[in-house]
Structure formats: structure tokens, C-alpha cells
Image (cartoon, rainbow, N blue to C red; front, side, top):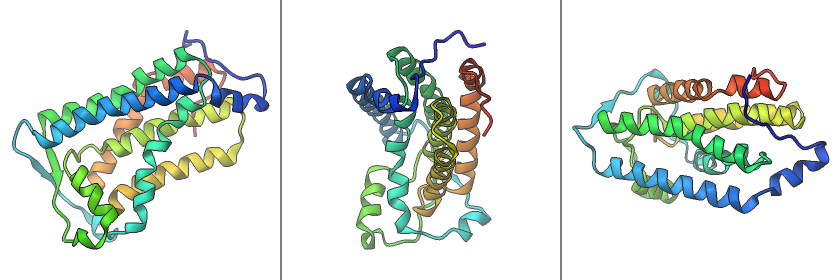
Length: 228
């Protein structure tokens, strides 16, 4: 049993109060975490410590063509990963979650440092797609394996799932959570930022990190089973 205190509003009517609780702490905490992560991420992207390996494309990559409509879904990760903390009531839970979500991030950064990698450039004229072109200029197709975009989405999906159950917000939102996570994972391939092997590795990293950081014990401490 997890000894961590798990806060729960007394009724659904308190969900809004939960969202507003420590609102600025949640907002600036998320922004600060993201900033620190991106400084490290972009540094490793621009200054690889060794020769960059190319992650090969496989059959799924040839089946999934470039789909520019997927860009907003891809970018929605930054809203999605903030949702677990938005639905937390106490600062101690928020800080604890911040430490936990750092696990897949640090693991991914360690891989990028010791084994810099990227996907092969796509044969696409990005000037025809200004939004995607901007993404490519900021975040090139490096730091590919494992996909931290997918890893953090999967990690967030699991923690958000039990939080939605804890707040008794209903199955439709739980299924929406799963679909959103799957859509984000798909979008990484549809905008040609990642290949299938990156997505698989990112999924495993997200699942493993959630287990390692005590998702099962935490959910049981809230009187829930962490199964989907």
C-alpha cells in the first residue's frame, strides 16, 4: 500500500474546485518543468555526444503517409500532459507527480546522450506546409528513439486514467483519455517526426516508468485498480 496521502474531493461538484486548487502553482510548475526539459532536450539535439544513428523505417511507416492535419494533435501533447496535475488537489501530490514524470524524461535523455539517433529525412518539401516546417526547424527529427512524445503521453494517460476514476467522472472521459493518447502516438508518425520503432520504444518506456514509479500501489491506495 502506498503511504502517500491521496486527496479526493467529497463530490463531483468539487471537481472545479480541484482544478482551481493551487492553480498558479500547477501552471508555473508545469511551465518550469517543461522549460528545463526542453533546454536539456534541445542541447542534446544540437550537440550530440557521438555519431548519430539512423532509426530504420518499417512497414507501418510506409503505410502511414504524411498527414498535415495531424499537427494540432501532435502539439496537443503539451495540454494533455498537464491534465493529471490539473486534477490533483494538494501540492504534495503535484510535486510527487513531477518527480515521477521526470523518470521517463531522464531515461530518454540518457539514451539520447549515450546513443544519439534520428530518423532519415522525409522526401517532402516542407515549405508547402508552414506549420510543420516550423516544427521541423525547432525540433528536427533527432532524439527519435525512444519517442519521448509517446512516452510522456502514455505515462500521462495511465495516471490520468486512475485520477478520472477516483473523481468518478465516468467512462466516456476515460475512453476519451485513451483515444487522445493513441491519437498523439499516431500523430508522431503522421507528421513524420518518428517512425514505428520510436513509437513502440516510447510506449514501453511510458508503461515501464508508470510501473516503476508506483502507479499500481498509488491507485490501490485510492481504492482503485489501475487496469484500463
